[in-house]
View 1 (cartoon, rainbow, N blue to C red):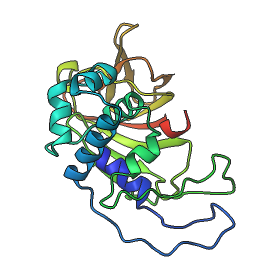
View 2: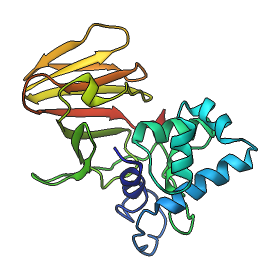
View 3: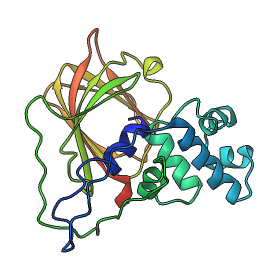
View 4: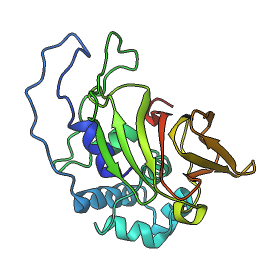
Length: 230
């Protein structure tokens, strides 16, 4: 998941809902994600700490060249790298992403104990995000403060090489194979093949990679722990 998409549905989605017993705020205009503003915010947080790019690279395990390109607005970050960067900067993840708007404004955070809510996604709807190794459709995104992130992914990577490096993120992950077959590779176990109808739940702090097994993409239902509540 690209950080711009995560940021946008954190800060721009509903603009309301039964989160607290106060007057609803006036609707806010949707602001487009700006890579230059994102990079400037990263650079500001780094310089406030008196760190060099090398310091931040060592703490986040992201290369200096990639960080330099982020800070100059040439590229953004994946979901996993954004979370690693937030941790390295000792910044709250949700506020870290939400302050990337053009005016630096941060939306109010709902209490973690918010209750009585629901979220619905109709057939064929959802929040689509494209990455090099998969196509994601995130479900039930209109309520921002849920503790799980759920969606359907079409796994387009056909090998570990096509997937790229292992990824890791806080919490747990659940995967159910809807169609085709996938391989779940981790640093601790031999690659595991899952076929249609199979499922797996695992500690997602374990470095892992998921790719299709065969000559066509596979489709999976997935749920991951939202890192804002770890």
